[in-house]
Each structure stands twice: as structure tokens, then as C-alpha cells.
Image 1 (cartoon, rainbow, N blue to C red):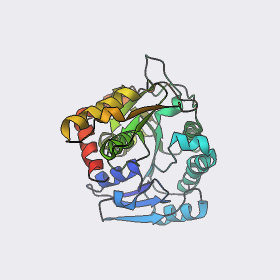
Image 2: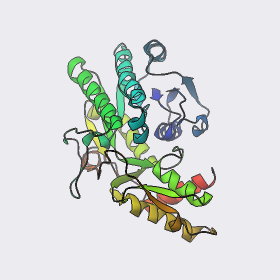
Image 3: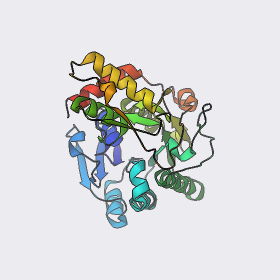
Image 4: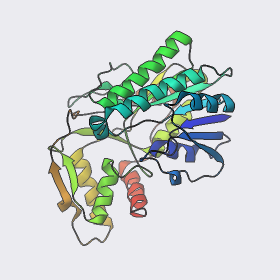
Length: 318
């Protein structure tokens, strides 16, 4: 089976490739190698990496038609909300135009392919203190990033409905684990603990996120691509019910590091409150009942197990 991955140098894409390479797939990764990408994230040799921008149609089409993939897993995206507030254009270019180019190019394939579109729970807007997002939740994106991802989701659905395009959409909660860029919250907490630098928390720190270990998410994606016929033109919301406010999460990680490593400072003293992000959504949380029921998926890692693996990774890559 031929597997084409977009964004494989990035956080989730690289973890997926490292996991998928254990199976009998012929893998091509296409990645624009932007600032958040790292070629060293891919720790296997039996794949082909091609640097190209999916926002450039001609090169994208040539790669796809030359390779003739059976499965396309589309991770490539600009994903940092803060950056989308400062410079929305690159998010529209990559996340919307790039997805359109992939849909157009894949539409020219003549084989029985399957397009898996990786998206986010942020497309649904925000929740109050109760309730969960699921596959029937209406879209209500609040940031340039989430609006760009919602747009790409709608494009995929439009191609499904108009052209019979064989796709599956996956909306996931916040991932954490190895290979994530250090600008993101959990890597920043961990690396700042070890470097004795302040840990900034937006506003009062009461914004709540649902977290999942990246390996658990990647195993869910593998399960989806292994069950093509039962998941075509379906969508799946994926989460692990590991909800924490930002300050709870930060204090938890700081305390774990305090308890397990002999540092000369108290990591909890590094917490600093800063002005809140513009348009900061209050809470995200996923109801993953559908993928649990339909495909038998469930997360394997507790937060405590996975965060120790994550801490060990960043401590070794300071």
C-alpha cells in the first residue's frame, strides 16, 4: 500500500510516520520544511521525503500523480493560534488553498484511494463549563487559525458531496508528546522548568483544554485508514478526556518535575500571568464515543504516564 503524508516533518505527522513505518507501507512525505518542521523528527529511513509547498499546485499534482497513493493523510497546516492573529495570510494560503490543491490533484487519481483530513476541535468554537463537542456539533470558529481549518473541512465535505470524493475528516483535541515545537504550551512549560525561565500563562489561566498523547491519536488514525470501507465520508472526533485548565496543567507538570528531578529551583515559582490572548476560547472538550463504538479505539496512556515520556523527551532535547 502506498501512503502519502503531508506535513510529515511536523509534530503529529512525524509521530504518525514513525508509527506507520512499522507496517508494510511505502511512504512519501511532502513538507514545506517551515520553522515548525524538523527533519530529525522522522527517525526511520525507509521513506521518501520531498520538500514542496502544497499551496503550489503544479508540484503537488506531479508528486501525487507520479506516486499514485492508495492513502493520503493530510496533516500539513499552519497551527499556532497566536501566529494566526499576527499574520492570518499564511494560514489561509496553506490551510485553505493547500487543501484545495490536494483535493484537485487527488481527484485526478484513478485508483481506489482514501483521503484522511486531519483537523481540530477548535473549528467548533468554545464550550461553557459543561458539554462536549461531537460529530454533530455546529461549526463556530473564533480565530483566524480555526476559521482556516473550518474552511478546509468544508472544502473536503463539498468534494465528498459534489464529486463523491472518498474522504474521512478527523477533528482532534490538543495533542502533546515528542517532536512538538517548543513554542507550544506543554513543551514551553517543560523546557522553561529545566532552563529556569518564566512560564507565561494567559489571563487567569482558567481556559480549559482536552489533551491527548500524540501516540494515542496516531493509533486512532491508523485504525481509520485500516477500515476504509466503514469510515468513508464519515467524520470522527478524537479526545482522551484529559481536561485541565491552563494553570492546572502548568502546576501539574511543574510539580511532577519538582518531584522527579533535582533542580535548584521550585518550578511553581516560574509561573507568570500575562495579558490574555485576543479572542481566547474558554473551553474545548471532545466526546469520542463514535470512534470507540465504531472502531474499538481507546487511548492507552494516562496523562501521568504520557507526560513523563514527554518530559524525558524534552529534557534530552534542551
